[in-house]
Image 1 (cartoon, rainbow, N blue to C red):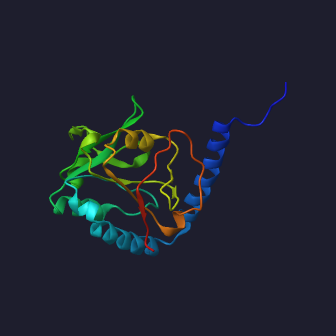
Image 2: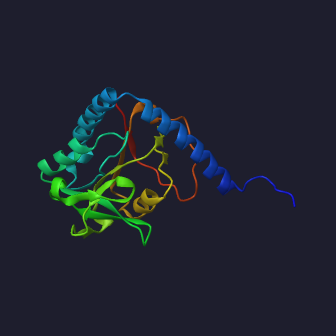
Image 3: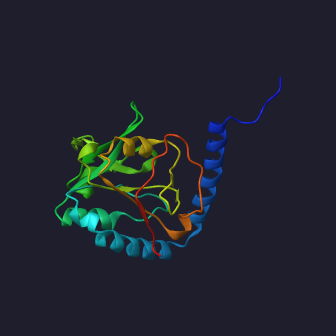
Length: 196
């Protein structure tokens, strides 16, 4: 029995896995103080975006590990009187539900992989209501191509959000790459904001 070359889908999956590992290693290696400093710089840039200021319903995410720290962004969304939506993983449907969070301190619980997510009691909101969506990811290109963590959760969520919703990724400069492998279901973001 002969084994031919990997199928295009397998080749993309393998290339993504290698790039994901490389960028995560680079991000994990960045020192804590600079990650905090860059997070603050990026967060201020997000607040300055006209698209953020105009949005009444903002979807964000609770950061974990070496990701950009989103705590200040989440607090500001509430302080600005906007509706805050955070994702909760629905394991049965392999999907993200956007839930209305009013008090992150009380409403967030440890979810899958230890990522904080809204408690079951938080109301599910239709993704079509989102006006501004902060999207996590491992790597991005200047053109908005995005490499996630490999579960496809955000690609499915992005596909369900209104096309007029602003999709913004916030990432450290070290997460930017020239190009990355894209499959047919991969969703792009409109802008990537870095500390630079």
